[in-house]
Image (cartoon, rainbow, N blue to C red; front, side, top):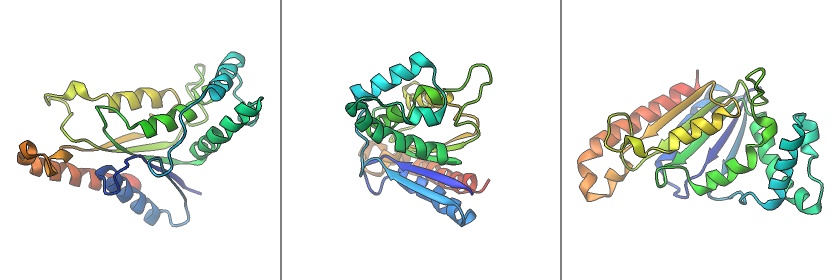
Length: 223
């Protein structure tokens, strides 16, 4: 049965990243009426930052090389570790269960929101990393779509192309766990042209970028 994990991270209810991710989710649900849809709002329900207890678990997993996920599920030993793992493991299970993963991400200070980073740090554990011998891992074969909203323009040839630490960071981190095999970025740029006076001249560019992202989202949801 098809399954979609939809994660939003903008604290702004009407954010562009939420709008475009919602377009994908709507089209996906229309195309897969029998599918499973899981939604997580990291702004409304933030994941606690990684703590000492989970780091101890992760160090132990790295030391032993344990990859059997049934055993990893039971990796916590102390009461503190068990409490921390009770936060992380359900998030990891959501990731494992999904066929398609959808991230709605605004660009904050050229990167990702701290709410998303907190989630990322909880779920990117060593047993999910690709096996060097095979290039595969527990998350291989999944489709990932990232809808971003950017106040400015950061594409190739723009004055601030080197300021984009969002897409390169995500590509690098996701590649560690085989989530770049089918990875799509849909960028809505120049969103600040809606309210910053000196950027008003770029409103048409922003509208075009938004339309392309929405069209891309709906198309990606059905392929």
